[in-house]
Each structure stands twice: as structure tokens, then as C-alpha cells.
Length: 300
Image (cartoon, rainbow, N blue to C red):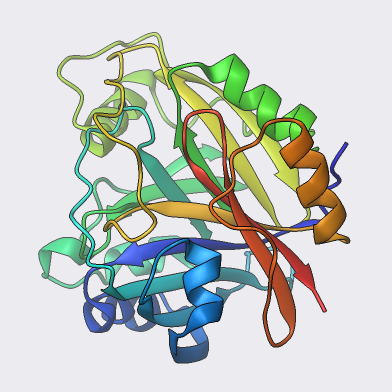
């Protein structure tokens, strides 16, 4: 079985890098680690397209209670051109990123007037140590501001997708769930926040999560495999493409990428690319059972 060493980064395709940096760097306070234009055969092979040209900005943040850096890669595709990837919060392949943020209450109190910076609801305290709020970036991507680094993936066949990440990729089931909200928040206030975040058509008061989610984790991050119980999500109309606006995928670190690639191919896993060597890394991209992308990385 494959062994994932850690959650390296989350990649996110954006339409306008300058607007995205104004949000993630200037507003949320993430720091720029690198900002590079990329093109050439290496990237054609990695992303499975000809004539790839893109701008990649690697951002880092810190979780509230530990010094480990969390990484977010923003990618603006000059070629191939992407199309907006529009869907509802409950639909298959709808994803959102969770970013650990310090001083969430202060950030909320000082939000500017621009629409995409504004929170979808006030921060919600789910426990004495867990505060969460949602906002949208300039492309409409859901961003969960919380105390951990994660990527949520909506599914139709939750058990099959969960089994892929757990049994095929070797991610560990999360040792602890965030649990229900803490007593200071009455149920009607929690429900109001959920309705606001996800624009749900009517209340379902008995639910905290309106979907049953399954959590997997590796060092530095977590993947949530979700299936909405209400409303029921729509299936994908057409396959995902890496360069479409709003598409996201995790980058997971392995020790021996060539061995992992051979093992996964033997199990019938679909790949966008074989292992491609870079300056200080080797990487390839595969798909999970519902077509979501996963980048596997070996540091050299």
C-alpha cells in the first residue's frame, strides 16, 4: 500500500492572479514563497497538455497553534484557457479549501466593503478551540477560515472515494472529529450560519453538518470526503480539467514516486502524467474514482 508522508500543498486554478493575491496575500495575510512563470516540455508532460504556459504563486501560512507552514499554490493558466467551473455547494466535485488563520475575529471585524472579501456569516465557535467562518475569493471559491489545513471534496459515491484515499493512497482516518458546536451557540444560530454559508433552500434544523463527511489526514493537512444528504448534489456534467477556474487538488508527498506510480498503475488508477522530474522534485498527477485530481510529489 502507498504511504503518504505529508500533505504538501493545495493547488487552485484562478482567473486573475493579481485579484487573487489581493485576497489571499493582502487580505488574509498569506506570505509569498515564490512567484514564477512556467512553460516548456516539463509542464506539458506534468499537466498532460501541449503548450502549457502558466503563472504559479506559492503562498504559505501558519496554523494557530503550531509553527508548521501550510502551502497554497495559485495557478493562473495562460494556456490552455480555462472556463469558469460553476456549481452549487452540494454538487459532485464541488471543493473548498480550509486555511488556518490567526485572529479570525479581528479579520471579521475589519473586513473591507468589497464584495468578495466579505464573510458569508460571522465566525462560529464550534468548541472552545475551534472557530470557523466562510468567505469567497474573487472567483467565488469557498474558503473556510479555521484552525486546520484541509480540502473538502464532494462526492456521489462517498464510500468508494473514501476507500481510494484510505486504502489505495494510504491516508489515515482522522483521529478526532471537530465535534458538535460548543454550548454558547444555540441551534437556531448554527442553522442560520449554515443556511448563509451554503445558500440552502430551507432549514434542516437537526443537522450540524448537512452532509455526512469522512475525514482523512496526513501530516500538515486533512482531506474531507463529503456526500450531501440534503440537498442532494448533482453529478458532474463533464470531466474536470486542471486549468478550469476554481478546480483544486491536493499535493501529497511520497518517498519513492516511481514505485508508487507502478503500484497505482497496476491497480488501475488513471494518470494524467507519469512521474516528471523537476529541479528539486518529481511529480505526477492521477485521478480518484470520480475524476478529482491528486498530485503526488517526491522531494529530491
